[in-house]
Image (cartoon, rainbow, N blue to C red):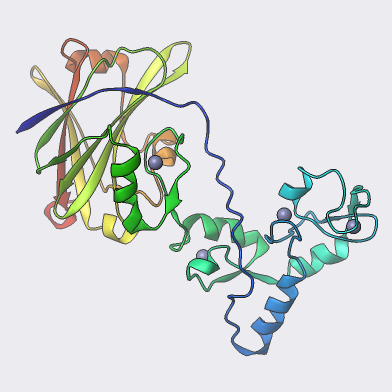
Length: 293
Ligand SMILES: [Zn+2]
Ligand SMILES: [Zn+2]
Ligand SMILES: [Zn+2]
Ligand SMILES: [Zn+2]
């Protein structure tokens, strides 16, 4: 069993506002007249500034030009005619928009899905062609790219994260009593894959602190389904255990932490298992076939 000390990292408080403006309306492959027509119609909704789609509520300038809501909030006049933006709603275009199928914004990465605007955001969030975001917690890093570039990115830009080899490792989080929101991150390489263990401390309310420990696989959702893992806090004649399927870094750990879908414990429990302010967490990755999950 190897023991590794991982130093804590104070969280960057800034939140990620990931807005991708990449869009290519020309890469839509049209099959038959109906979808070709839908593609033609969709192009009418292109924002002249960012080439994303102008979706309801649709507002037009005094001369009838459209601009998307995110560009609109940054503009003082119409980008097409320089006229006043006004607040004129275009209900006819909104009606048309609700019958048009728009290509997924990841179409340039290979997605061929076309969706009603009401379904579009949800699809794009889970679209398998969506670029991967940097899996480090805290959202201070804005990197995104293909899955095979995630590990090179971590090694280049997050050199402080240690990667350990092996299947039975104690992750030692130091200084768990540091005030405020803190993240501890460790990587473990085994079964030909890389896992990232995240321990996050959050101050919930009135100084009440909670710890969240979770594992994500540097891999796709499909790959993550092949694994399970167990986290353990081991103390004198007591043990706290959590078993689950790892998250894929494509979905990330933020929503799981928000929903407490991970190993959660408060400061009193942490003190039960800590030694001199350092907390050991045993991490056992597994093939999912070896578990009863
Ligand atoms: Zn725009
Ligand atoms: Zn205009
Ligand atoms: Zn898609
Ligand atoms: Zn990064």
